[in-house]
Image (cartoon, rainbow, N blue to C red; front, side, top):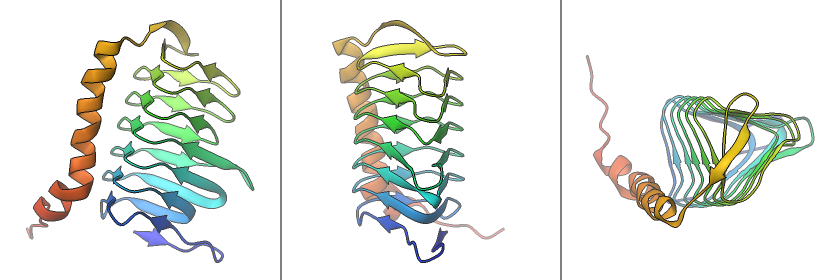
Length: 175
């Protein structure tokens, strides 16, 4: 569902797919080729949300921003199931694991990986191409080229979901 809020309307790229059970509210901009999964909640009610091209926001994610501030998610980002993204910046090609939290003013660099269940705390930074896990998240290693190649293939699957497979293949069934 899409909602206008106090005159602010979502803007969605034509080649993006937003599942019917997702909720997009207010000042939200979603680029081209994005996949917004079932149950995702993206609220630009009193802050702004910007999501770059070819990004995947998977099932039951929450994306929100503080009043008069913004949450920026780059291009080719993967946000895993149940993640919470709040008033932060996530660089291009980053991967946020399932059930992870990226909190206010945190920054996740390009190709950085935040492991499943990790918490990137308020104002914390995960540098580009680093892997961070735990609560609070701690850097434990570097993202290798082989990992980037593998994840580039995975990311393209979701772009295909958004542009073609879900719009053509998803059919509601009556009980």
